[in-house]
Image (tube, rainbow, N blue to C red; front, side, top):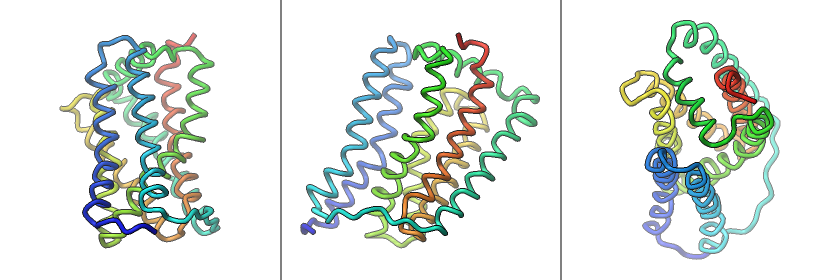
Length: 240
């Protein structure tokens, strides 16, 4: 492993913590009124930089040896149980709380407009997106937030501090997305953002406990699947 200063490593982690929020603001807020081509292009370039940076830093700068993933049954079972509980709670809250109380009216309009603006308002496009995010994007996010950000933080901080800081970073870009749908003055923006931080904290703890991304990935995948199940009820009327 190459000798890199603690300051340089922490700067890399700081970049990892803040870059996703900056890119989310760019394509979700700054480019909101632009043609969808600009939004998707910015998002695509941002994702390449975001998810490519950890590999460059860890294997080309730090020169860590390549290790195959560790499979542990305890991590898988715990992750699946947590994911199922949270997914069921999300669906129940939506159908028996948020929707009948009218808390989703403004968000539904914003979500439908966003989906239509991104040209995802066909059944095929929504199905493809709803498969890609739970199956693929959730794993990529676990690799980024738990394997890279949390793990590098844990090299320099206590477990508790690494869990808290990485989870707040994981939450930050979700705040912008939720605010775009619910509004900055809505308590739901901050309640749901806090839920994201708690989920990130559990996944970081599970990764630290098992040494494997499989448990957090399965958990994250189930939560994302619930989001797209709820999303189908929201955008169903505009799908063609």
